[in-house]
Image 1: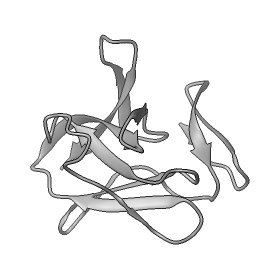
Image 2: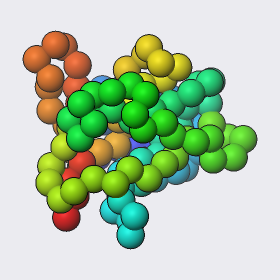
Image 3: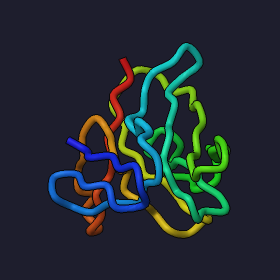
Length: 119
């Protein structure tokens, strides 16, 4: 279970500090009519993208857009039904484990990937 914070701090999943947050935003990817909405709080980022096995782990294929001035980034990605691993890419080079996801799995390279299940 992820704890979300109101002030700048850390998001904890299973006791691990995974990322910064600044607002009480639901960061769990969620299915919408056009696809899956990915949302992450990254107040100091200049760019954010979502990469996963649904896009060949491309750090540029699915950029997110800044949603306001409080560091929230969001975007919808059309993904077929299934279960997918993903991470956020901050400023084109820093890979961030999703602060909240349906589940988490180790990737074999020392990282923790988020899992999103598309119904």
